[in-house]
Length: 146
Image (cartoon, one colour):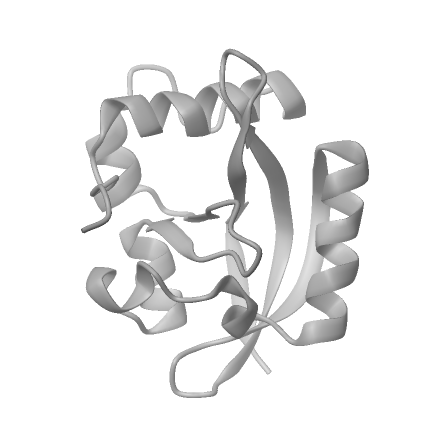
């Protein structure tokens, strides 16, 4: 069984420290914790692992609502199912080269097949304190159906 990262403090540290180090600003407001990010954050956050076919390891409630998956459905889902292939690969290539990408705008696919446009997205590598890549994550504050 996969580790449950919903409110895991070590995973929260990996997410927030990687983001701050690479993007140069905080992911969450000062004083907010893993529980706030999972339950209350008004923006979506997802993360996947480093498998050859990466699988989701985290999705906060905002992301679950947006993509129409419960936690149990989201975790372990191949991340390639959340976006159209050509666009997703170009995005992953850019993040691989630069460690993060901001201002991202792109089409995503919900469980029902509904397509939606995310805007002002940030995608970044999850890199631990030892410099080891643990996956990638994305956040976006807004989206609209297309």
